[in-house]
Length: 54
Image 1 (cartoon, helix red, strand yellow):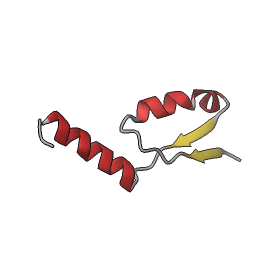
Image 2: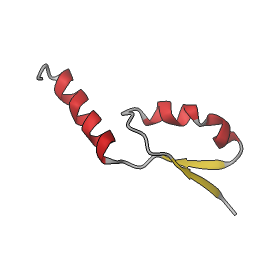
Image 3: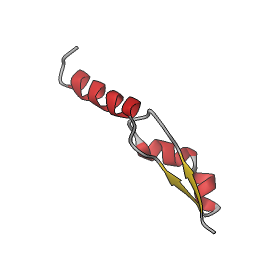
Image 4: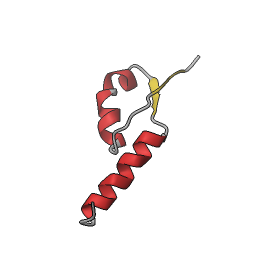
């Protein structure tokens, strides 16, 4: 049976999140990082800030 961990993260960088769970990946545990409302908000906020808006 496959093991899957669902990780709800607010980070806009999925690669950093997956790096944190690298040990689990090495143990053949699948890590899934779904989109969620807080993460989406942070992505939008970063885009707004990078465009020079407040």
